[in-house]
Every structure is written in C-alpha cells, then in structure tokens.
Image (cartoon, rainbow, N blue to C red; front, side, top):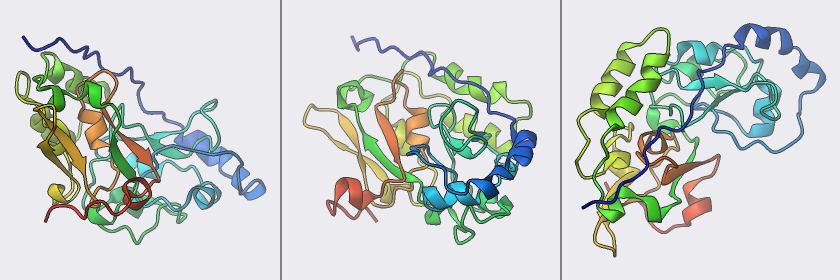
Length: 251
C-alpha cells in the first residue's frame, strides 16, 4: 500500500493590509534609499535588482490591490529589511503569471519594470527539486486525500474571491488518489513544457525536471502536496546560475 504522506497544509496567514501604513512610511525611502541586509524574498513579477527595488518601492500596495490571485503580501514589521515592500510566499499562494501582468502596470515607481509585459517576460527565480526523498512522483505515491480541502482553504480565506481564483480552484480539484504530476500540470506559463516536465526517475517513478523557460513563479511549490514542499523556488536566481547550461528545455 502506498505510504502515508503527511499533508497538513503549510501554515498560512492572510495577506497583510499595510498599504495605508506604507503610504506613510514610504517617505522613509527618501532618507534611507538603500536599506542594508540581504533579502531573499520572492518579489512580484518585474522586480528590479533588490537594492534598486528597495530604493524605488514606495510601499503603496497597488500591486497587491490588483493581483487577482491575492498572491502578493506586504513585508510586515519584524520580517526583515524592506518593511512594507511587496513579496510572494509560495507556501501560501504563488504567482500565477497573469498574461497582462497587472501588478507591473499598477506600479507607479519603477520598482516593477514595465518592460515585463507578458508571462514569458517574468523572471522571479528558478524552481529546484530540493527534497527528492519526499517527492510523490518519484515514490509513485498518489495525491493524498484532503488535497482538495487544503487548496480551497486559502481561497476561502480571502474576502473577495475573483473569477481567476475560482478557475484556479477548479484546476486544482479532482486529483486525490491519482499520480502526482501537480507541479508540471499547474505551471501557468503559456508553454509549460519549456519550464518543467515529468521525466522517468531511476527509482521507477517520475520526477519533475526544470528547464530554462522556468520563470520562478512558485506555482509548483504552492501545489506540492507534501507538508514541506519537495520543489521550491530560489528567488532571484537564474537557470544558468543554478543549473548551468545542462538543458534548453522542451519545445
């Protein structure tokens, strides 16, 4: 019998509503334009290099307001440098690569580069199969019961569900007891096979393989049904930096 996998949903908190506070604190950027310290947060699509991002972001929360998936949070006090700046926690809700990239269009300061015009332009990080020993695809363990409920939990926690969220939930559903290919199936970019595919593994199952089309949106991490995601996104890291020139993807 397939081994039992712990599937408690990663603890989540509702996205912060610090937009008003951000408007007050945003002026602090004028006095301290380059905040020290190393950030390793997954920034929204189009985010410029971190040091420049921290200098340009006025903490207005406009990107959060227009995100149809409620993916964007604002950095709270005590969460490191850049209080009030936007980030995405893929353990709670990933970016789902809206084709029009509304968060970028809403950014008034240039912290999110307006050259990011479509999903394929996004470069947030790179996905990595970090824990092969827990990957359900490799062990041939079916998607466990309760997966539907835990994916619904976040959507039901937000005040106003959007049509995009409703469609996303429909795509999540009905996978309990089936072969786990969620990370590949839920990749939101127009040509997902350029970013990720399930390939045969030496242990007899199938594992996700990452290609250079990966945009680092975190969807694979979001949908991974293990309590600690087997696949994670390394923020602001490129394919070449992590994988070298191993592969150019599948067309």
